[in-house]
Image 1 (cartoon, rainbow, N blue to C red):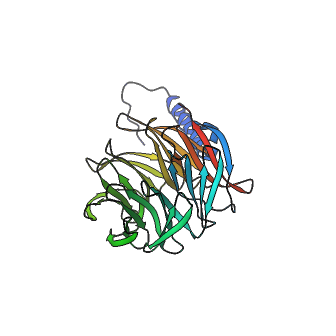
Image 2: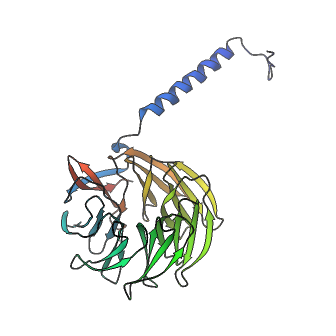
Image 3: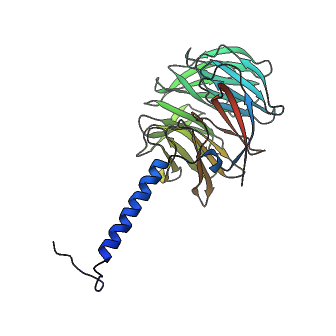
Length: 347
């Protein structure tokens, strides 16, 4: 083979030096890949308390935070219950039963209601937040999951994961309206107060769908390319961004809602699921099935990776208190018990 020399003569040892450098880089990359995730101490969080939850050490799912009442509601999917945690006293205020395989929980402000997606019965349970009792049940299609609440129209939109639709619940009558066909598996659903729309991940079609609550019609479809199972979703409507977690490919996407283009991609822990955003700190938390929590700061119109670390096995759900900047992680098994880990954010 003939080697062409450019840019002047090259020392006979240059090739060996370059080869040695490449080998060193390869070894470093290999060691980095084998090192595994950073520990929880790498995260910009300080542990405050572990609140032991009732029931078995089994799967926990979505949360709903009532900051005014200082209460956090947690879906205990494995037990079929919903826990109400008194954040002021660090105790469990009560537990609601009769919610088999509960997934999404969302507060309906003004109605004194917590909506719980009960996939074991394919319904949404209406829970009175004053008495912690189920006061009604509404059929919600096939495998209800995430729930978005629109306070303007008094309606809830429920991700029908296997029904390829959004169930619409009118809270004035506690009844279901005709479902909205979205053409695929519904991932997370979010109400965006800035635009007054509901946005839904269609996770088997790589799309983000927009729904107008005034008409319950699909008004837009934005492609989400190169994303395996776009499930988790947070919408920063003021800055026209959607943050989308690709569950199957361990990626986080930044989608510009004005242009409809993906403007950034980041790696996360395996199985990214629930997203929570601290509006004051402009900080995004991504919790994953692998237990890795990824933290990003929003700067100059995009996200900047801040830290990533393994918090605990199956730490896939997260919530943030906007006033105190406290961050909440329900953990299914800490020394044989389910707990709520309470953490303070660091700068």
